[in-house]
Image (cartoon, rainbow, N blue to C red):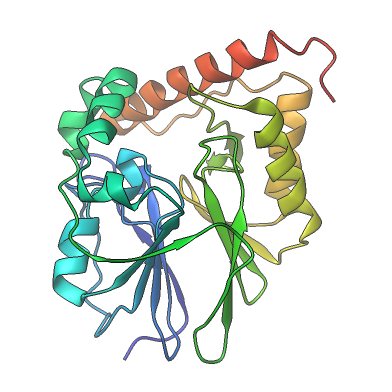
Length: 257
């Protein structure tokens, strides 16, 4: 039986830390996000998996979902109205190709998931045993984005930036709704989490949230992350898309605060 909380690299072999999935072990075990299709994720410690929470339907968060559901028969939690895109992910794959290009070949395309879906809209609480999992609606990065809070730890998906080498990075590709993104970020700051699980960076200190907010408000969001090799090339591709989405939106709000 598994115990505790696990931050599991779930990117491809070329860059395992490109994305993290998080596992909360309790009487009911939960995974938050499912990495890429070509994931090197190691979940050998799991004897069962009751739920998979999908924070949003981007290719690097749902790639291994079909395989995981087949293996564990997990129930999939997703924002209301969007399970149909997991059953037929053709639009997800097309959109990913338009934003990330050849990176999709490294990640692998999303396969259809034939699963038991629980659609949520935010505010729901799921009893895990000793802990409760609270669903929080956090739009902006995507209109179907949710985050979750469990035992004081916030799992923010892509709604609160990422972090590499101690530096916050934007997670803001187009189409971005910047006003909603900032509102969601401020909401998550107000929750006063004791730690934050960011999909691109793992478990980080809660001051990350305010640092990320400040980098947007001061427009000091371009970063220099030295991780080397193909991993750095993959990250650069993401950052290029993130800068584009953020700059398009910031141009609409010259006096943003």
